[in-house]
Length: 278
Image 1: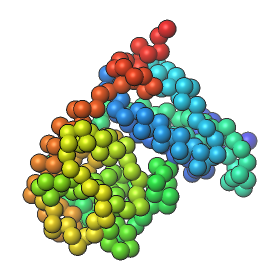
Image 2: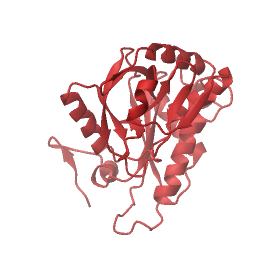
Image 3: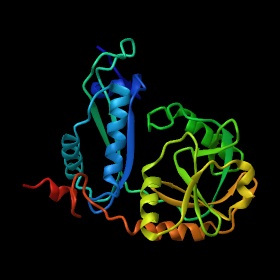
């Protein structure tokens, strides 16, 4: 038996593995009127992580039912949603042992990103298994904290050769006045980035994926960061200032209007709570 307490109060023992064994993966998204954007991308992420970390398949239908149940239980139509996949039976001493999957669903008030331009500090760091959204977030939060101590708003991760990878918890794109450029490097290809790529294709906007080093940043006029919480302009990366980030931000917002909001697992717009009804 494992006994766990917080501030002198007993905690639910079912959550012990998530606190004592830092092994799992997750996705985060916004819910509006009971619907989400790009659910297929979030589901693909969760299924990929489950296969790679546990060798197990995630039951998409069961997950959808749990999401509906959670939103109904708290009478929420707008929320920030985090889905974490782990296993209470995972034993790091025997990591190849087959285990069932557990799903932790967290709901918090809906979030939006500020529209003011941010300044970010380039730091040399690459995440472990960067293609997965795993729970190893300690270095990301610490790097963000250190960047803020130096007067910046966040940290931008670059590799040992100075190529732009990703932000601490976000992706980014650059603008040269005509083309959208997505940095090509070892990084998480976020759901927001994938949604934007799809939507920009729908607008007929020229976009490229290529390596972007810090040395070529003066060739861009704008930059925008993105994650499942939203979009925000980047006004400065290190000492490089971008004057037209708002133009790229407007383009991205226009593109996202082409992506409808749907309940998870549904092909037509609607409400998660309604989707649970027979």
